[in-house]
Image (cartoon, rainbow, N blue to C red; front, top):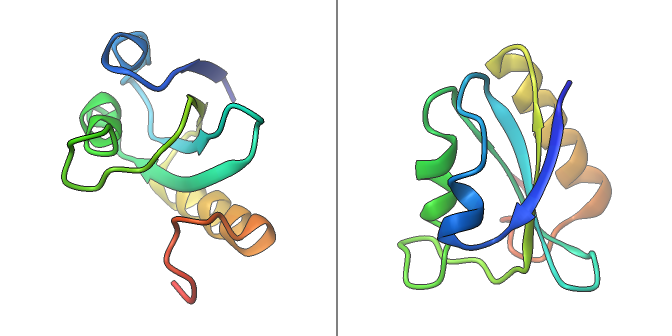
Length: 95
């Protein structure tokens, strides 16, 4: 499983691969997890751009950490596990 960290801005997001589903974390400057989510194959950059300032689902953050996974069910399990363990500030609780 490939991991990649980029700045949370338009030019950083353009460097992300689109060939597999991903679990992503939007993190603060200090490394705290503000939000965890998933993006389908071919929609990684588009989904993350929705979280940029001014987007429809804006989340504050400094960096994005992605982990590519083989399929969507695996991504959903990893997302749920991370949200349960970390309880990121901007994830809706009880999801």
